[in-house]
Image (tube, rainbow, N blue to C red):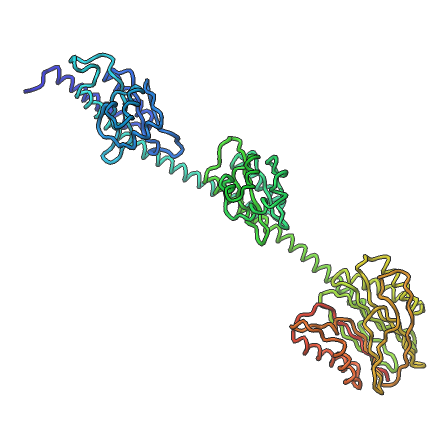
Length: 584
C-alpha cells in the first residue's frame, strides 16, 4: 500500500531538510557550530524547549578541560557525563531507562531522551532532548517522541558524527601544525641566541643575556639564576623575592638543587627534598639546571609569569636548551679568563726569569788560585735560589749563596732585592756581620711574617789563605781538606727576616792547596726519589769526600750524576743550586 500524499510530502521535506543539514554540517569544521546546529534543528523539529549536545574533549585538544557542551534548559555536570560516556551507548534511549541512578539524574536535569552521536567504531558524544511542548496526535504519546521523529534525530546525529569527526581531524591537524610552527620558532630562537652566546667572553654578560632571554621568551616575572661556587649557591640574578633569605643560599638546599641534572617541578622535588617547600612558599615552580663543567653548576629557578599561567613541558624543555647554551657561554668565558690569567702569568714569569738570569753571574771572575764553578736549576720558571761570586780586588774574592722562602715570582722578587742590597753593602767594604745584620732588618721590615732567607757569605783572602764567613741559617757548606777531613761552616746566626736586630758572629778557616769549598741549597740534600726518600747530607758528604781530588767542574758533575741516579726521573719541588771552589 503506497503512502498517503501528505505523508510522502512530509518525508520529502524531512529528506530535503536532512540533505541541507548534511551540506551545512559537512562544510563546517567548527565543532561548537555543529553541536549548536543539531541541537537547534532537533528542538525545531521535535518542538522541545530543552536540549543539550555534548562531545568528548579528547577528540579535539588536550588543552580543553571538561566536556564540550552546548545546552539550553538541560544542566549536566561532568560527573554524570563521565558515567554516561563509560556506558558507551548506541542509538536512542529514554533517559529514565539508562543504567542505575544515572537515568534518574538525567531526568532530573531535564533530559527525556538520549541520542548517541557516534561513528561505526567510536562514541563521539550525545544529544539530549526534553519532553515535547505539545502532545502528539495520538493520546498515548503523552509528549513522547514518535518513531519517525526518533529516526529523524538519529539520522541527524549520524550526519553530525561524520562532521564532528572531520572537525576533530582538522583540529588535530591544526594543533599539530601549530606545534610544528612553535618548535620551528623555538629552534630559530635558539639558533639566534646561540650566535649571541658564542660571541660572549664575559660571564656577567652571558648571565645577563640568559636573564633577558628568560623574560622575553616565557614572560617570566619572578625568577632567579644561581651558580654553585666553592660548594655554595651564589644568586647572580634575583627577581624572586625571598630566595636570598631562604635556606637556598645559606644551607644545603641550593647545593642539592644545583647538583640536579634534570629539570624538575618543585612540587615533585619537594617529595624527595622537603626543604624545597621553602621555595614553593615564595612562589617558585620549576628548577632547570645550568650544567657547567667540573664541579661548578648552576640553576634557573622559575616563579610566576606575567600571564599567571603555569609552565608547559615544552616550555620547560625549551628553557632547558636555553640554559645549556648559557652554560657553554659561561664555561667559555671562564676558560677565556683563565687563559688570559695564565698568559699574563707566563709573561710575568718570563720577564722575571729574564731579570733573574741577569742578576745571577753569567761568567765567573778570574781569580788566581781559585777554580770556581756553579750549577743552578730552578724547579719553576722563576726560582728563589741566589748565588754570587764577586771579585773585590786582586786578593779578595766574595762568595755568597741564599735560599728565599717560597717559589715562583714572589721568591724571585725577594731574591732580586737581596742581591741589590748585598751588592751595595759588599761594594762599600761593609763587614760581613754588619751586612747580615742590616739585611736581616731590611727583610724583616719589608716582608710578611712567613717570608725569610737563609744566607751564607764568605770572603777569601789569597794573601794569607784565610776564609772569613757568616752563615745566617743556611745549609752548612762543606770545606773538604786536601789532607783528609771535612769542616762544616756553621758560624753565624739566625736566618734573615725572622726577628729584628739579630747579632751574628764571623767564622774563620785556613785554606790550603787542594782544598775544596762546596756551597749548596736544600734542593740538593732534599732531592726526592719515587719513594719520597731524601738524598740527605750524609750521602752528599760521602760523594764529596770520595771525589775531593777532582776539579770543581768534575765534583759538580759527579754530584749531579749521583742525584740524578737517586731520584730516577722523579719530579722535584725545590730549586737546586751548587757552587764549588777548588783552591790551588
